Amino acid sequence: MKIIKDVPTLQATLSSLREKGKKIGFVPTMGALHQGHISLIKRSNRKADVTVCSIFVNPTQFNDKSDLDKYPRTLEADAALLEQNDTDILFAPGVEDVYPSDIDTTVDVSFEPLDRVMEGAHRPGHFAGVAQVVKRLLDIVGPDYLMMGQKDFQQFSIIQHMIDALSIPTTLVVCPIKREESGLAMSSRNVRLSETERSDASVIYRSLIAARRKKKTHSVEQIIDYVSRRLTRPNFKLEYFSLADGRTLQPIKDMDKHDYVVGCVACWVGDVRLIDNLIFKGFDTLSR
Ligand code: AMP
Image 1 (cartoon, helix red, strand yellow):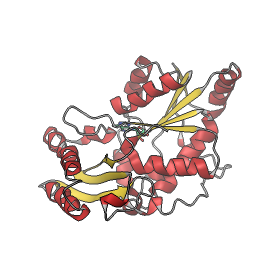
Image 2 (cartoon, rainbow, N blue to C red):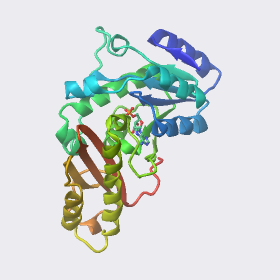
Image 3 (cartoon, helix red, strand yellow):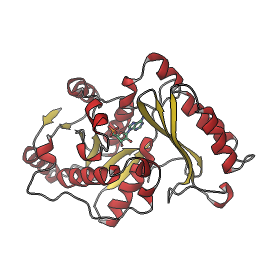
């Protein structure tokens, strides 16, 4: 595996691979890698000839400075894990490489109404920062395939919208959520949970599964109430649970009026903010 830290070296390397007809798969991450990230690497290895993984903790998507400061950084261990899993190139740029002062990297696309709800409503400016970094990285890497996780449902929806709006020549491939044995969705933030919090946090997934079982017998309001009650516990703070249309992400009122429904949750466990989601209706596989 090559470890590259600057844009010109990466672009020279990729253009010579492209000249040989190689297809490029790209996995953007913020590091502190786990098996969820690795599932994206494996998917990329199957789809493309060359897999590039980027590790960049993007300051522009953090609305909370202390969240940015506390974000785990484990570059050496990440590099070893990527190497073991047949990654071709690790791109680990600095802030000045991603955001040089002479390039305007802001993205002028309206994401409404996708960005008005859930993460967008609770983390002001978050998706503008996500779109900015993904657009800039896509400009640098120019991949044939972009791998993203269903774990960040709203994020991949917004990125698909950006790809369509700007006619970016890449195919977004959405990969299923990897979970720990307890059902807890894998996340870089999980390392900050105590052992008890980590085991308690599995109630998030169990509540989603139990809620989905009620979809034919209970109203949307009753299901929301059920999940809210289950996630009201000591040391938990539920930020939102939304049953949303899978395309518009807007909250639904009646399950029967939608063919694609996702249940999305954000919940604090101690001082760690966790998100998860489950498809309640439609689209078993998210691959496009
Ligand atoms: P992050 O490093 O958290 O920005 O995540 C990088 C990519 O990995 C994003 O596309 C995430 O959706 C994806 N990802 C994170 N956690 C998981 C997971 N548990 N399963 C599958 N994909 C994941």
